[in-house]
Image (cartoon, rainbow, N blue to C red):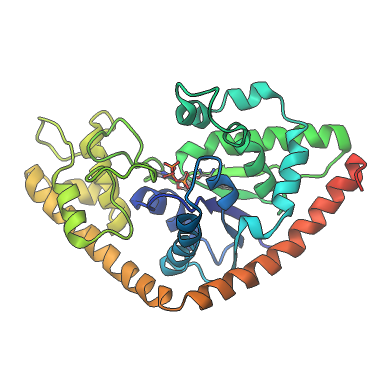
Length: 327
Ligand code: ATP
Ligand code: LTN
């Protein structure tokens, strides 16, 4: 029996090269090895305000991006979270076993709520319980995500362990799988900060659907430093980030890359990086454009995915409900 993989991306903002290198790339690469469930987590997206029209468009956009990146609906279940109500139901149940203190310690909540802790939604605070429900419904073994989601997967293990210790073995404990490179792609202009989907400032991110010119100008404008050598030194955040992106899109080793750019200036390196990213996105974007010509096809793939997910999710939910004494 193959191991089960579950992961998801929120249909909000603009998907960027960090989402690709930190998550999507690995989903595609190990697709044959696992039993995969990939979700478009719209219930997570509404933890912050969303325009309904845009949210609906973004759901299809993310589906198109999954398929264009190489997720094959014959090999992987792809569906929209809100189409399977077991996610919300299990989240509520897990909620009732989640200490407030655990949620309060989540770095993502602290970062996203900032100074607005009293005004953000209860959903944003409770975000990890919904993510735990997503993962636990499918007896997930591995969760391939970027570095920023590691804490949420650990939270999922903790809540699963707590439930199991009260009601007996119910949930499998999942493991986060974080890539060695590209797990935390940084903002191009402020390399101390992670590249973020919700950041729409020009030049800060490399979006998967950006034009060639946007890509070139963002890379040429990226922050580097006053040193000269092009080497993988994590202490030199700007250049390190660009090198990781180069590594991610070309597949070359770090030694090969350092050799290739020995004695070469930042300007030359950036030009070469921009061309590699453009080349890489060209193939991806033409697949995407082809797919979105037929939105009904995308919808029907998602409906098939939801039907498959539903069977698995309902089975686990009814086991949980019966253990808790519900229904
Ligand atoms: P937002 O900034 O709106 O919170 P996001 O860019 O973090 O969005 P998510 O939908 O939260 O995007 O994340 C989707 C996946 O991409 C997750 O697995 C996450 O860990 C990964 N990811 C997000 N940002 C990065 C990044 N900068 N580098 C690598 N992986 C990332
Ligand atoms: N919180 C994740 C998105 C997400 C997810 C999941 C990832 C929701 N449910 C389950 C993996 C498994 C994020 O990237 N912000």
